[in-house]
Image (cartoon, rainbow, N blue to C red):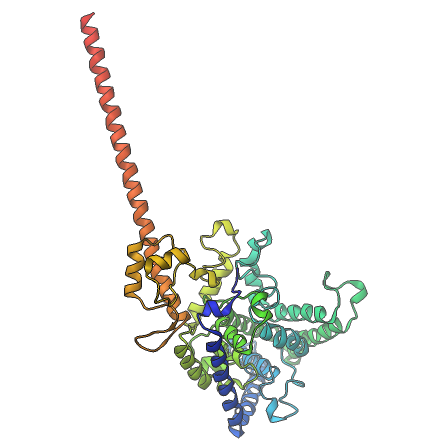
Length: 492
């Protein structure tokens, strides 16, 4: 099962989490109070640069029959679409620039260059995903309704097609997001979704808005702009399709690297029921993942390489995430929490592995929904990490908490060699939380695996010795039987 008690999982007290929440509130206020002309210039320059790139790409494609022009125009258009999608459309629709009160650069007026409508995306994403991040049966972005991304979800035969479905989703990501948002909007509005478009609901507001926007996008990229280039319409059509594909693959990779690598935790409705603001912050930190990036990579990802910071502060301007990340990492060090990050390739390969692994039935998998790399809960620490109980020795701890696999000697040895698993280290005065608990669990599980392997080796050696003894006994009996038969033959 996913995490039901975030305090137990994070190895933090309620007071610790409340304090963490206050410190994150302070970071938010500090950024909000410092917003000004420099930030406004950033977004206006980004919009101008994106429009110049798109215009240059469209103009170059008039000569797209020539290979160099096709490659140049396609590259310029691809970059323009990525910037519009990631740094502009996504972030403006989050309300990151509403503070400017610019009617053009505002979450209520911006319409992005994607198949789905901004309004339906905001309803499905800004509220559903960011409020209920990684909560089972509440966050529809957890697998986008077609991928099984946690063992908490029941395996179904259709999941065998997951590797193929993943490829289709990646190539047609804008359509996947658009249909996902349409379904979510219809559900919120009470429009039946048992069929994709039931006849009696063809002309409902969500369907009409979706098809109107999708029709405009298809006409723009595959009819109007190709037609404008006259004799080069075929090569322009291919260039537009390629640019859309590049944008889709990049957006897909960025989103999956931020949501599905190991370390991006999942939660239950039970955890959400009485969740405090501090626990909400903590859930965002533990349910998200970053990937390493320099300024260019961060810009091209819409600064979603800082997915942890984005989930903490989705409406803070994205150009501030880099500086915020330094302070968030300092808080992770202070509260001994993991800060999940890695290279883009590593984070995607972890998500890719999960997609293919969870396509298989659970009985084919080794781990459980409590201790798998991509799915875990507070129960993974049962009988592994040792809480701060100075009045108990190793044997008493085992008797009370049930670490049956440790014998008295190894438990006492563990207590002697390691500090308590959570609370404040009496020697250093530093807080010991989830990060230390994960490290200790890894050590103990490695020791347990080594002990189990040793037991298996000894059992195997014992069986082999027994087999050799039985073989020798049988051989001796056979030799005696032969000697007796020969002697009996001579006597006759």
